[in-house]
Image 1: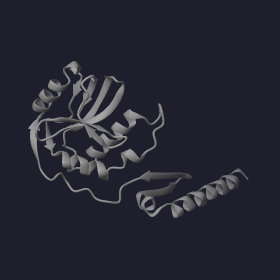
Image 2 (image 1 turned 60 degrees about the vertical axis):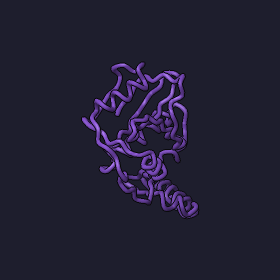
Image 3 (image 1 turned 90 degrees about the horizontal axis):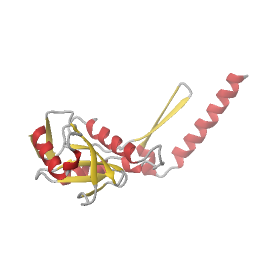
Image 4 (image 1 turned 135 degrees about the horizontal axis):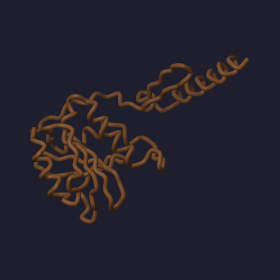
Length: 184
């Protein structure tokens, strides 16, 4: 009896989800994938378009990136962590192309559950999951003042740009912001 009840509930959920996906606008239908495994329905937002590698760039040492970051954020001190020994500096146009491809900004904000730190981690993970983009000098930065988590990148001219992954906006660091932690 319990198994039959579970099977009926699962079937109803599957029909409802199928209806939602079928009647969604075309662009969302193309961006959703779903799979049913062990009575669990997994839905993920993806991007149907492929992303070409950065158009150009310059490989630099971790020391160069550290110097640029410490020049901009001296208050961070030794709280900068690197995962590689060199990084690819790219043009701002490449990062903007990456952001328009990525779907991180399309997720729904939920305070204390899916908020600024989750957005920044997702974008960072997306970049590092693409072999042609994994070496780009794009990382995570946490600010103590204001309390916020963002992404950043260092461009080919050595400029540091902040990325708000919730909206894909790219901007310079406001003067009164104090960085606490940087990871690249």
